[in-house]
Image (cartoon, rainbow, N blue to C red):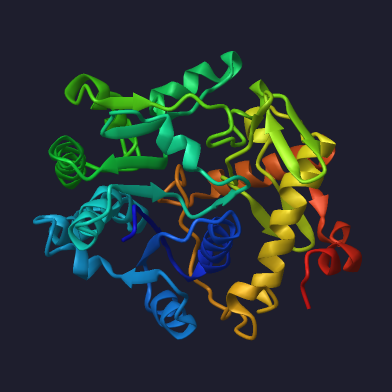
Length: 348
């Protein structure tokens, strides 16, 4: 019996990142079921061909059986907004499939695990719902207008209270889930601010090693000894590679957007190994998809906090941020990932 079921979603533009997430969980000894909401046909057919043990696929159409109103939201929302709407519906679907499991955990696909998350479940105690704060540093406090908590790790116990919270979240997202602020609402994320008030068995997970990301990296001290990475002295559980971009031969970690410097230990112990994994997966050289390179697609990537309308002004702003990252030393070239690095990670 699986004690925990994980779920995530991605399309073919994020296929390598999704596989890197699954690979990192398996590497850390997590052998529970993982459900993937396939956001296009290419992703579904590729994962079905791989037939990874314990990895199950589903589609938005399958979710509609458990979430009335989900289908209608397609016509009123952008592509990214519809995907946000699917987040709690995916959790509800998996709760219905995994009736014997204790927990269902939603994960964003652009993350990688560095430690087994078993102690996160231990920290829940008798709680039924677990959420993770953004942990913005003081200089970024204004970003809490988009939500105190981040939809990167959201966990629900398979109890009446856990299911009730998940269904409340799902129903609110079906009613309203747009890529803009509206009072306390923002996409699927703003609703998390109400969990603790409406569902008292909600636990706020404050472990600094959970959901380290570009927006909170600047408030933490990262250290490493051999392959053990620590955050303020605690083990790094998972890192959230939000906004990571590859343009030509350059990697942009998206730190300049949050006024954060790329420290050597973060670059060498977190970013470079992750980029090496992505490259290996793209070429079909990592164990998880050995011999099955990622198909070339032209689907625009979908990430959280991404504007649904790519205006000329927005694209110009992105280019300016990339220039800032280069000048600040935050961006690095792909040729930093040497043949020796690839060989040391057992890639072909």
